[in-house]
Image 1: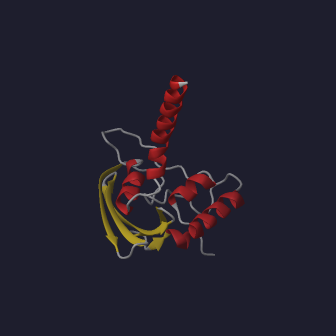
Image 2: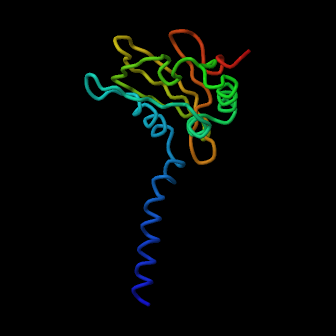
Image 3: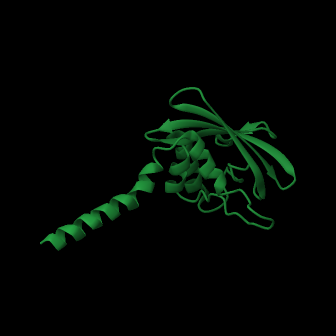
Length: 161
């Protein structure tokens, strides 16, 4: 009987440890949330082709965006029937192609539920700056809007019709 209890306890401890990273993702700081996003984009060496974040389904969109903008993005995906919709570029790099280096992130958290992340990086040979308006949703942070410096538009403006 002691052996059964030992193995049962060991299995429970392993399950708790395995679940811990998933739980931690929902209690992150705005800094770690934004760093996680750009870790998918930043090239670590010459010729490194990063995959970015493929916003291909509702689960992925909800992981990174707050509910209002996520609903608009998902509705656009459905209306596009697998074709390119209103969002015809990667919102995190403001482009269709990228080779991101030198990512610098600055966070200005003006309340417990709102923050502004200024992200500067080099994309190929051009410097760029993107500002992510962040909103705390539940135990995690999500993007409420993205402001682009070089074209004077925002992610939310893509969905205004």
